[in-house]
Length: 334
Image 1 (tube, rainbow, N blue to C red):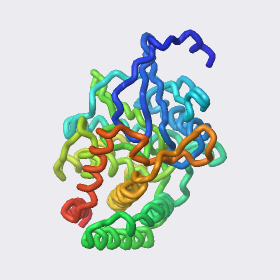
Image 2 (cartoon, rainbow, N blue to C red):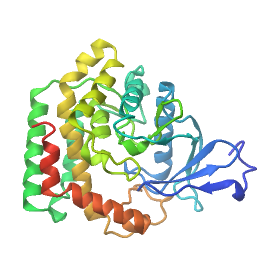
Image 3 (cartoon, rainbow, N blue to C red):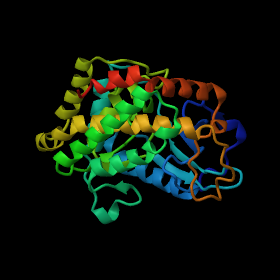
Image 4 (cartoon, rainbow, N blue to C red):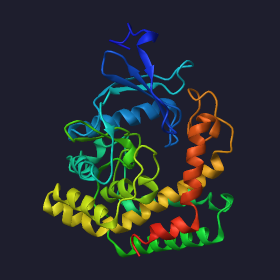
């Protein structure tokens, strides 16, 4: 790639693995980071996955709260999923509740970016009915519930919440659309020395419902996911986060989005919990080979990640699927 021909192996510094979808390698002396996919969570082939992520970084860059994009390396036999080259953000893990207002401002900056014409929105997902279309995604993941060996009470409560989400959608007009992350859990933020929160993982950006990002930043299933960002913010602290986000929006936009915030909180949790069921089933499968040649590179196989990280994820999934935690989380909107 132009401008990177002189990079030596000695200048590549692998970072500790902390996620299920990417490895990260520092380009020493350049303040850049290689973001190396191990799979596509969106079931894209390797090249389309890179182009999709590139569009996410490019579209959100104007917010001032995401890393700058510098290009990508195409998939090859050596690097099957290719790699993105992005700005190396220097910061600390988000610490809740103190850093939640900074995260709220970062999300508001993304959500208020001008919307391009619909013909200019691809390759990003462009939802015309964010709640109904997200429920369709949830229902696709819910197909794994019967195989996930759930406690009977857990399965009952999840199905009750699925029906409630359907009722929410039937009772509301289509939600306004904004550019969103759709992966705004606390572990995906870094906080710079000046207090600015930077959202660093932009794999799943889309035009959809802003309330999904607010939920993903503060649901129990998000705030307790990463060891580095583990927290259990109180209702008042979560309410303050929503208030900070609302205060950073134009009043008319905040008013338009307000009726959807709690229904989207329920639906984002349903997306997360059905993903847990899917992961419990799919992680037992064999790793997918030759990803530079296949059309669908989604791969939740435990073989695709370190045993230490898999043990952590399994523990989180087991906890979130337990009836006690499901009952606790659904109190958010009860």
